Structures are given as C-alpha cells and as structure tokens.
Image (cartoon, protein in one colour):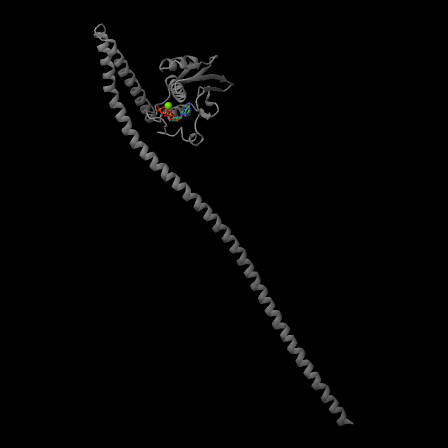
Length: 299
Ligand SMILES: Nc1ncnc2c1ncn2[C@@H]1O[C@H](COP(=O)(O)OP(=O)(O)OP(=O)(O)O)[C@@H](O)[C@H]1O
Ligand SMILES: [Mg+2]
C-alpha cells in the first residue's frame, strides 16, 4: 500500500513539477512580454516625440522657405530699383546739363528774331515775317520741352501761397496755342488753394495740351473745380478717342509717349507736382477725364 502511495505521490509531484515548470515558464514569458511591451511603449513615445519634433521642423522649414522666397523677391525688386535709380540719376544729370546748355543759344535765336523784326519791321516782306513766326513757334516748343526736362530732373521745393485756381488756370490758357476748332469750357466757380503757383500752372498746361493734342484740333475740353472741407478736385475732360486700355498703366511712366514730337515727360512732371502737394491724380476713359485731388493745405 505504501508502495502504491509513494507511486501516486511520485506521480503527483511529477505532474505538479511539470505544471509548476510550465507556470514558471509562462510567468517568465509574461515578464518578458511585459518588458518587451514596456520597451515598445517607450520606443513608441520616443518615436511620437520625434515625429512631433519632425512636424515642427517641417513647419519651420516651410516658413523659412516662404521667408527666403519673399526676401529673394524683395532683393530682386530693390536691386532693379537701385539700378533704375542709378541709371536715371546719370541720365538725369546729363539731360539737365544738356537742357541747361541749350536754353542759352535758344534764347539768343528767339531774341535775335525779335530784334530783326523790331529794327527792320518796315522792310521785312510778309513772306519772311511768316518764317519768323515759324522760327518763334519752333523755339517756344523747344523751350517748353527743355523746361519739361529740367522740371522733371530737378525736383525743386514748393513755394506755396494762397491762390485763386481760376487765376492760375487763366495764366495757363494764355501760354498755349488753342486751335480754332477747340472749345475750352472754363470752370464756372473759383476755389482757393494753398499751392506753388508755377507748378500748378504747369499741371494745367500739360493736361490741356494733352487734351488738345488727343482731339487732333477739334473738340471740347471741359474743366471743373469742386471742393469739400479738406480737398479740392479739378477735372480735365476731353472729347478725344481716349487712352488705349493697354497703355493706361504706362502713361505716367517717364519717357512714355505715343507722339512723334513728344518727350513723354508731361504726365510724369504732373504726377510729381501733385505728389509734392500731397495729392493724387487718376484717369478714366469714356470720356477721357483726368482728375486731380489736392488737400487745401497749408501742409
Ligand atoms: N487726354 C489724353 N487722351 C489720350 N491720350 C492721352 C491723353 N493724355 C495723355 N495721353 C497719352 O499719354 C502719353 C503720355 O503723355 P505725356 O504728357 O506724359 O507725354 P506726351 O504728351 O507724349 O509728350 P510731352 O507732354 O512731353 O510733349 C501720350 O503720348 C498719350 O499717348
Ligand atoms: Mg503731354
């Protein structure tokens, strides 16, 4: 009986042992898996952190790329502006010197013609007198163009006072030749403006000349003044063909002209003068209207 018991005991302890060994293995496997899991979790967290950092770096890289593209654009712009300014400074200086030097001989031509007319008026045949008028007109045109060049390159400071705009307009009209078939409708009201008289007169002269030239000697120019508390607006409208759509953006650029005898400095000079007075100028088609808006000043 004792032998049987010992066999049974022996058998139980063996299966127990096997079971225990299995449990132990399972437990160590569990421990190993747990450790592996912990390690994997840690790796996962590190990876997630790295991924977040990577996203951050990617965002920073995109921002830097954007900034760099912007800065390169700005740099290119400033570079071309710089070269343009440099070029204009040199051309401007040359033009100013040339214009200045040409003014004297031109004045001599004009004065000599006047002198000949005065001294020999009785003896000059009518035919010759017509030629004198042609010389006079051509010289006046040259003086006007030289003044335009000088006005453009030498941006002289304003000499302002309170003036009647109708008075200035009248002086401007008296300085230009108005063809018979052109009707100038003057402003019906007067307004006062704190401004540089000579310069505002040049604005009127240029806008009127452009209107007359655009209409090819026949049509209507309507000029108007209006005012609000702070601002004065004057408009010059003509019945000409207008400005082609592809040229509207260019007409205020220096040297842009569609005329064989134009210098393309009229509107740039006008724009500079208006800017000096802290005003603005704009243009619309159908009909062609140049609108100038100026603060009443003093500024
Ligand atoms: N009232 C207008 N109607 C149609 N086109 C115009 C008018 N005013 C200006 N322009 C256009 O704008 C261009 C530039 O004018 P801007 O006065 O600067 O120079 P210009 O008249 O050609 O020459 P300049 O005034 O130096 O003799 C003109 O050549 C013309 O094509
Ligand atoms: Mg002009």
